[in-house]
Image (cartoon, rainbow over all chains, first blue to last red; front, top):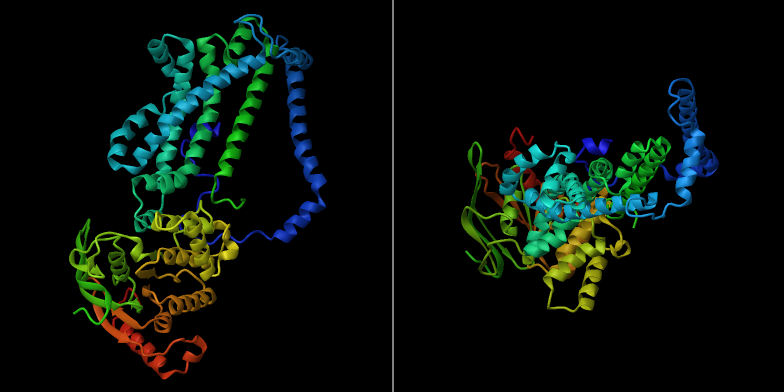
Length: 298
Length: 266
């Protein structure tokens, strides 16, 4: 959720422009010692505590279903439905009846397409706005007006322009992804310390060297933060967009199952959407850490 | 005015900044000639414009009046022949220690040295400041003193005609600072560079310099006094404590600074 509200987020381990000395490492010896002493306990906690939470949710679900909402499916029904869905996720019975894996892949395809378009437009735009006061003054008011608008509001515009659902959904994802990308990149460019620019000036860097050797690497952690936020939000928005556009995709799958009154399928789909979201987040986290120059790993 | 073999001439230089509350005259009528191989310290209270003067020599700022000439050529912008060691080291954090030096070497010697020669030169410079062992580390992984060593290696790698040190040891603890001062003295003795160093540390100025330029307080700061040091080299900090020349130089600078003390600096 937080990724929706926050558009500009400092990179988790912010670069240290002032070059302050690295904070003294926490007492490494005692830490490893205690870690070695109770690795089993830590593992048990990491598995046990979430297991208890899941158990409580299932218990609450069962009680709710039995006592108050009998029309809601019970846990075994959903479990059986999940087994049925996962037993053949890749079936194709025609263009409107495909396995859940295909639904997810179509959704992911739209997200990736819109996301990459937003990278291609948003990052250069962010650089211009961050580096150039004129661009900033010219464009920021427009961005300020458009950014709070739900991306779904653009769907009719997309349908009008493209007269097809697929490009329209991609267009919505593009709009979703572009604001965090522009704003984080611009913030990253503005945060480049004057010292780095002085180094570049003493070395007589030309404009191209300035961009490739100073601006891009210095801004990279911010860009990746923007991408991570974009991707997380895009994955949420695609579900809603597909409910409106229809066709194929995990969002329309939910809507379709609702029309079939197959609530167990909807619950399974929700879990699938959550898991894909976790994977996207983890992937972006991995990439971001890889390029976080302030971190200590090689 | 150009004396014997002066390599750098600062000629009637004045600098006025336009600020929101009107213009501020930082420097007025600064005249200084520096000979090849000389080590000159510029000392003064904070706000006396000594860093402004260094930035003018570096070309990072442009004088309002007068001009600065390096080997007779007017300085009109920054360049590697006037390499700067910045106070806060200014290493690029996404590059390794070696990468930071190599970046400068690649730019300055592009087309003049082969890739293998540039690699050797970068490693030689790291060796000079005793940082070869940390060549593959990132700036975040090394101490402040080590970062400053790398900053010095990067500046020396440009083979500058004048090396500019902007309070290079100001942010370091006393022991690290003493070590680095010894390194700088050693490098100066070996390479014979022309060096201008900004400092507010009297002992540092006396220990390292051939000449100490004392700046009067701003606004419209200028050169107050110049003290020539006759101390022989190599200098050893432990022996200097009882050296009469050292004591004389030290008290001359102290006297000047005390006389020029402002409430702000005191």
